[in-house]
Image 1 (cartoon, rainbow, N blue to C red):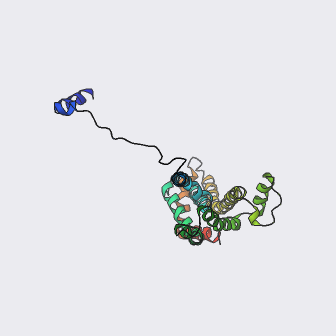
Image 2 (cartoon, rainbow, N blue to C red):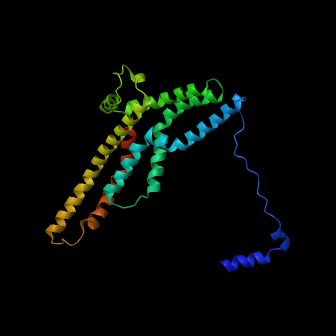
Image 3 (cartoon, helix red, strand yellow):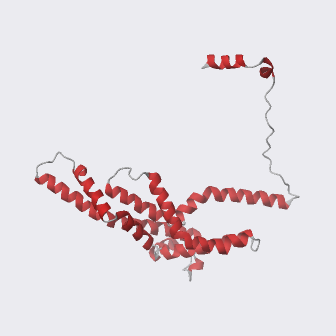
Length: 246
């Protein structure tokens, strides 16, 4: 490797080797001072925007239907015992587009009530954030169990809320997440039952024939895939998932 570098340097013209390499002047200093409030405001808005973009994946996962959908799809793959089929990229992509489908009415409300008025200069940034959270809060309240909500209200030492507006976001969001996980696990249990029955029947049949050294998974896997295809499993799972949000 060193010999190759020396040979390349030898092929270069002598004047090229003698000339210094010009490094561009890069300035990372933020323009604006304490005497320029507008410049400082623009810089702060830029920092806030970058922070929101960095938190966008977490917002997408935690404040939408993505959590329930991706967990249920993972349960489907586990119940089929097909290892990495479908791959993780396919499951996450499917869960992402299904989340867009489920959240389309909510996102349209956010766009019409907050984003468009803010872009047109009708409201400021603070009001846009408040109006943008209202449709998301309505969606989360619809999908959150009262028991989970009461748990976090109690742990946060808040006074008994009189209405939904009295519940802050830091109480609502974790309540919504654990409700989504509980619902996803309930759906996953229902999905597991028929495939568990197939495994038990195949294992009993193999033991009755004295074929105890043959792994039951090798025999039951084709039957589970065949059953899943015959009943249009993906269609039923997706339909059940979408209807669970209605």
